[in-house]
Length: 233
Image 1 (cartoon, rainbow, N blue to C red):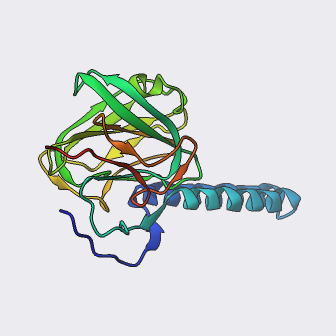
Image 2: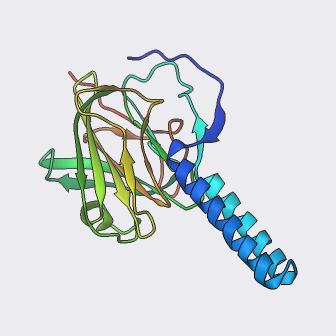
């Protein structure tokens, strides 16, 4: 699982945005036609067109999907950022659902303007996938990790470490998509899922992991190394 082949990056639109962008475009055109029919193509119509172009460009930007490949040659023991965004939490926490012990949690908050595709943070095998309905607190609040709607992906690395990656819905995000399947192999460079319109991803690591990021640091999904796992004896 270690060696990687470097490839050229490019950008496309994520499949999760296809219907949203089509329906939005149809709605914009329909309303524009109604304005032109009732009020003519004067100031109101021109202002509407300018506003909708700006809104649609923001939506297209939101659904962009860079094709990325980890630039390092070896992924053994490496944990990469599962999302673009900003590091908002680095702390030891009690994780009682899966591990029943203390874990090191690194949380990345995604703003409306970040890429919202999520990547697997490690190479390994998916042990469990679990979705829980919940609240929609602001994603950067501490209680969001436990109380908000979320999707958990538990991964076992080749050297036996269990890593939990948690996708969390926020005050605006209302849909979490998870592609991970239990019992399937997973790799850095592959998409884990997608969260629509701003949220957060938590990664729970074993104690003794070497954290490679700082609070407030910007991350690039599948590129930024957020931690190095301890060696198993």
